[in-house]
Length: 104
Image 1: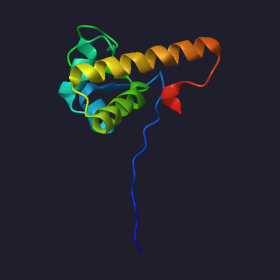
Image 2 (image 1 turned 120 degrees about the vertical axis):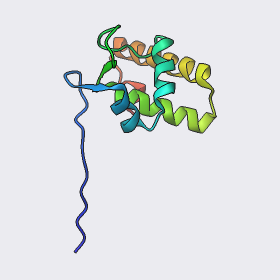
Image 3 (image 1 turned 90 degrees about the horizontal axis):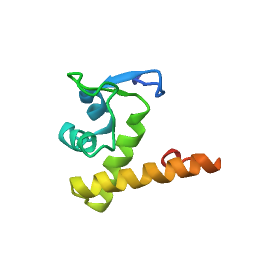
Image 4 (image 1 turned 180 degrees about the vertical axis):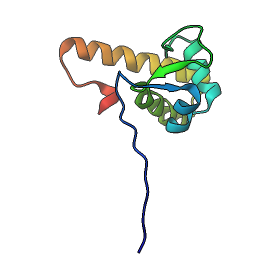
């Protein structure tokens, strides 16, 4: 008999995670996440907290960033631009009442 153990994380606005947890759950290196923070694409809960903490709902955004980086071989600047544009589209869709692009 085989037993498979898995771990689930409920993503939502209420939960928090560290930058290391965000990197582990998204498979995007901490350095790339730090670049997204520096570019203003991701915002920590508190600007000067060490280590930085993030809302759990950003895990899906960072996973999307990893897929974009792999699929299109984006450098860090290109990745930051792509994620920023996708978030802008998501915000515009939300204002129009459509399903967000990053959630599809």
